[in-house]
Length: 154
Image 1 (tube, rainbow, N blue to C red):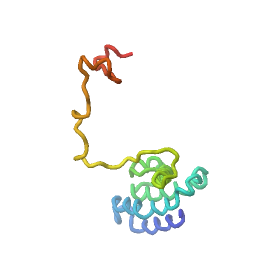
Image 2 (cartoon, helix red, strand yellow):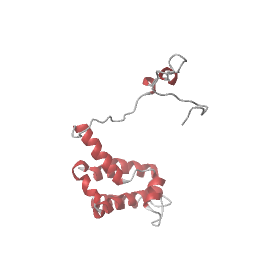
Image 3 (spheres, rainbow, N blue to C red):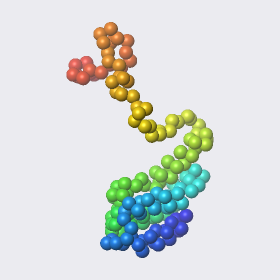
Image 4 (cartoon, rainbow, N blue to C red):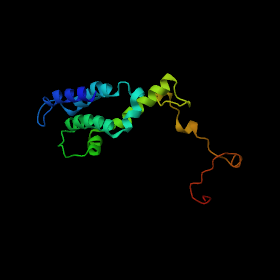
């Protein structure tokens, strides 16, 4: 997988030079649409193999190559800085996420986990409708009491 992705990145690098070629938005889209699915193929099966240093290094090398092309950076820039510049999640974390997501969806997970999904704003409740303010009558029966002036904080 890493060799195929490396060949693809080098083919793209011919058109993504410093002063001309593909822009970083297009390269990021190519990474998320073509290279990342190739790298994550079968991740739920082999995700534990990424813990070994040699396997992890192969995946980091591929992501570093595409990060350098997206950021149009020099080879001396660190991998962590490249990930921050391009705003791409490190590949080891992506592999772990893909594996966990597959196990949750397929029902292999031992514990029931809620998966966070996007919700449209029309379904969100207004904060004034969700917060119950304490009155003098309900002060002793509520589970959480917040004092904003700091008078009764421990």
